[in-house]
Structures are given as structure tokens and as C-alpha cells.
Image (spheres, helix red, strand yellow):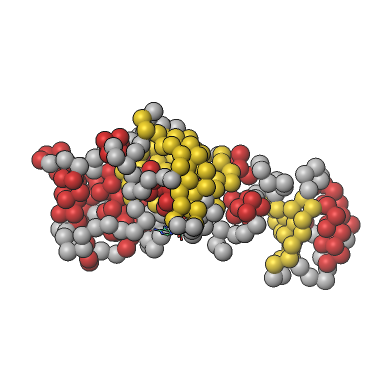
Length: 305
Ligand SMILES: Nc1ncnc2c1ncn2[C@@H]1O[C@H](COP(=O)(O)OP(=O)(O)OP(=O)(O)O)[C@@H](O)[C@H]1O
């Protein structure tokens, strides 16, 4: 559906996107996961036609996407990172303005406004001025506005930043439903929990480059360990920790050790070692690695830095 080939975008001396290539298929819920400044908004703005790349090609359904040809972009909707609404107009008036920008009117527009307000649980606030809305309500309204022209591809640029938990789950459920009904979604976030929950495929982006691409399971297989074992750090476990250092990566954070076994290390070996030291199994918890661990592995820093 959407293809980016070798896209580079610079702002003066800064390279915000550095040779990014990416293909998004129809029906995907694609996550772009990366920290602040990674280049997520820049990528969204290029696809949305708000900026042009310095090099590379963008195509949508086989047609070149150029800033000069807005017609292909009618198939796109954008939920921008910063709320774009008229605060002194009501929710309904805002939606009417956005709908008219897309050439909509009459019963079609009225119907779509009603459906959107209903789906986003804002129907009872339709006549209230947007300036009286919470950040989360404004975000929900922005999402309705981006969908009035029924795009095939929705670009959501960090749509839950500064949003209350109720709005956040309304947004998740709404986007998941639309995706099930066929809408293709590109969703940027720096929250790995969101990428994990929502996205059928994830691209990890940092410093303008895509470092890894795949489903969650495919990505986690890139880690040189399959699980992490945690146990309390105290005088009883110190020798075990020292001995484990030869069998994987061990780190101490506060009063907890985390141990990532080398590939091929048998967990039975680990439990034999710990039992031999009189350490009960209940001290140890094991968990699957996370995207956070993968991000650290690929880039040497954490998503939150
Ligand atoms: N208009 C601009 N002029 C100059 N530099 C810019 C501009 N927009 C973004 N940048 C820089 O480009 C880099 C990528 O920014 P971008 O906004 O695309 O990242 P992001 O991943 O969306 O992060 P954030 O969530 O902080 O917006 C950053 O270093 C940013 O400071």
C-alpha cells in the first residue's frame, strides 16, 4: 500500500531521516517505536505531504506521493502530534469545518459526525466549546476529524501523549475496531506497551534510521537471550551471581539481580546451581524479554533516555 524507498530528510545540518526504506501492506497496524527526536513525526509529515524528502521516493498504491499532487493524499488521514482544533468552536462546529475542507456536506457529513462522536463517547459534549475539553477529549475529537473523509490509511503521531487513561483506552479500542474493519494504521509512539498491545508489526527507529522491523515475536528473537531471570541481591545470592557471570549477562539494579542466560544455557543447569546453594525456587522469577530490552540491545540506550 505505502512504500518508502531510501528516504532522507535533513533540517540544515541535522539528518532527521537517514535512508529509510519501509513497506506497509493494506490492513496492517504498523507501529513506529522510538524515543523523542528519533524522526517519527518527520516520517509522518513526509507521508502526509506536509514536507518533501531531500532524497528517496514515496508511493501510495503504486502512485508517487508528491507534495505537488494532493489527490493521492485523499486516501490518508493524519492525527497530528499537536492538537489542531479551533478552541472557540464547539466539537460539532469543528467537525463541520474539517468535513467541509474535504468537500463533505449535507446528510453524509451529519451522519459521519454523529457516528464519530458516538464512537468516541463525545456525543453528549457535541455543543460544548473545545476550549472546555480535557486534553484527552480534544485528542479524541482530532481523531474523529481525521477520519471524516474515510481515509484508507490513518497516520497517528503519538496520539496518547498527555491523555488520561479513559481517553487512552477509548482511542485504543476505536483504532483496533477500525483496523479490524480494514483501515491501515501507522502509529508512532515511544511507549513500548502501546506498540506491544496494538501493532501487528513494529519498526524500531532511532536517530533517523530503522534499526529493526518485524512482528513482536520476530523482534524479540533478535535478542541473544530468550528470557530474563530475576532474583534478590543479598549475601545469600552473591556467590551464585558471581558464578552466573560466565554463563550470560548479569546486572544488579537496586536490590535485584537480572540474569540473561547465553543461548544454549539450560535452565535446569541454573536451577541445579541455585538448589545446590540452598536457594529456594520461589526466589527466582523469569520473564520474557521486552521491546525495551531490544531497544537497549540495538541502540545502547533506553527508550526513556
Ligand atoms: N522543523 C524542524 N527544524 C529543525 N529540526 C527539526 C525540525 N523538526 C524536527 N527537527 C529535529 O529532527 C529530529 C527528528 O525530530 P522528529 O520530531 O521527527 O522526532 P520524533 O521521533 O517525532 O520525536 P518527538 O516525539 O520529540 O517529536 C530531532 O532532532 C528534531 O529536533
